[in-house]
Structures are given as structure tokens and as C-alpha cells.
Image 1 (tube, rainbow, N blue to C red):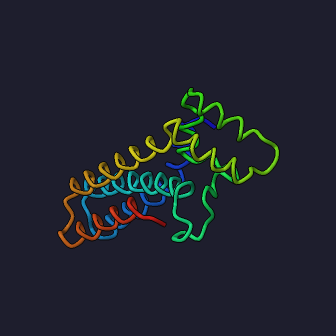
Image 2 (image 1 turned 30 degrees about the vertical axis):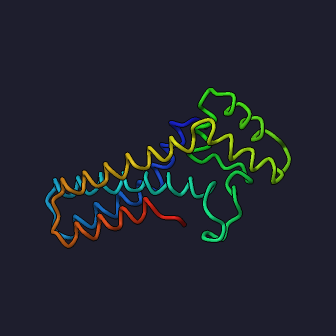
Amino acid sequence: MNLVECQEMAAGKTAALLNAACGLGALLGGGTPAQVQCLHQSGEHLGMAFQLVDDLLGIWADPAVTGKPVGADLAVRRKSLPVVAALDSATDAGEELAALYRLDRPLSAKEIARATDLVEQAGGRSWAQQRAEYHLDQALRSLRQADPAPVGATALSTLAGTLAHRVR
């Protein structure tokens, strides 16, 4: 799976779910067609930001907060967005990560730690963080363009920030 396919998969799952939820909320709330479209877009971007943050947490989250072991996604060789960005990076770190992912046995704790470092060295972590912020910014921009009632705008802005900056 390459990075484009991985992003398309996220868009078809998490982003589509939030796209539908926001758009349907606008529609059922009596929004104009333009508001519905803006909230669809806002939800889609928020879904992408959510998925990117979720994928980052799957590698770097504090186990005391999440209850998951460090590097849980790497241990099962999940091809999350930061991992695929690293694998597609055409860097030495990306190549070494690919070799770890091809192993036909469970990764040791030392290999999981190395894979974590390799994703970071190959730029997967910073790429995912930057993309998450981009999608959050776009979600908030689309929300402002929808010009919802102040109470709704505040609630949706708060929700967006909470989803995109969570630690679990």
C-alpha cells in the first residue's frame, strides 16, 4: 500500500463518517445547501485529522494514558499513515523500516523501538503531524464558511480541537 492508497482508505472510513455526520446535521438543522456543503467538507477534514492523530497515538502515545503498549501498531506491522509515509520516503530509514516489516516473525521489543525511531527518522511522524494540522485548519475554515449559529460554531470548533489534539 502506498501513501495515496492509505490516505484514500482513511478518507473512505473516518473522513466519510464525519463528513456524513456533519453534513446530515446541517441538513437536518435546516442549513442552506451552501452550509451543508461547507459542513460536509469540515467533517471530511476533521475525519482526516482524527485518523492522522489516531495513527500517531498508535505509535507514540503514553501507555499509561491509552492502556496500549508502546508501539502497539508497529508490533502488529500496521501500515498506518505515518508508517506508510516513512516507507514511501525513499530514505535509508524507510528502507530499514521496510526490512523490519518484511520479517516473518513477531518483532522484539528492541525491534519495535527501532521501528519507532525509523518512522521518525524517515519523516513519517512530522509528515503526519503537519497533515493533521492542515486538515484541522481546513475543517475550521470550512466551518467558518458555513457561518453556523454561534453556539453551534463554538461547539463544533471545540470538538474539532479536542479530536485533533487528543492524547488517547
